[in-house]
Image 1 (cartoon, helix red, strand yellow):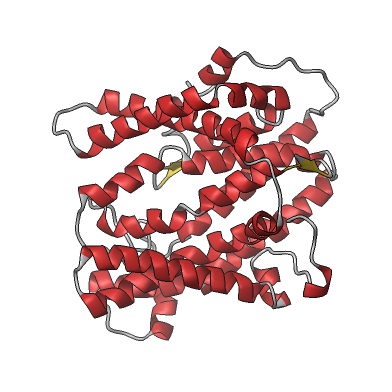
Image 2: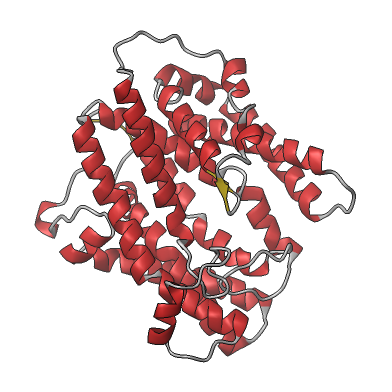
Length: 369
């Protein structure tokens, strides 16, 4: 189903993927490999399995979807209009989120992990002057979840500028890509991982994924192929993701090569499969899906601060009770994140700071922005 040329399966797949972020980031408090986190309780291989299973593909999928959306956007917008929209949608919330939300998260991290006993206002100055590993786990400066907005803004600006410079347009006819070549497009991913990387997040890899979305999956014929073989691709991708969990968490031998192969197989097969399955099962719109799509970006902005705050406060109430901490953090974070999203929609200045288009309740749209 399409409304005014809009591919609803892209919107629905995006907000469904973003819903994973709360359990994913809640689970980071128990990561079994000791990665710095805003709050860290203890290692748990069982809970860590959530992170290891989903991490290969859910952020790559978002960059591919961004590439698809960019190609569709440029069919309706000029380069100037597109970049103006990117500034409002990405750069403004990147700056406001880093200035307003991240100091709170790193303040709690400093208190929980490092025993900081000073006040928040004093720590606000520390945040902008303490540069360490950029995780924020020690109270230092961090972009937190807003790294995604930074990367996406840079990738969008650079890629679209290059495409404009070389006059790459949609007018040239393109042949659909055979399924083996579509799958083979994922082969360069492990080679790109270490390039232009900060904190394990490769700008080169995510740029490549963005371009795959722009050139490959903006073509409905390629999406149709992914749809046709979606179930077997999903089965293979899920098996690779499960193998990645086993190799990374539950084996003691040196199986790094197999682990890498499983991880990147899961990354690309799951990305292709989920796009295909979304075309088959998620190509619809309605009041609920349209609203969830509209607030999905707000959900991304607000979710992490509530995960950190919920975990911090619950630990003081229930102690190191893993089941209550994990379930409670997820439940409270979901409720408070959605509440913040709904409140933001009613306040124009908050809509501006979060890159959201304000619409009064008298003029609700038929489809999400």
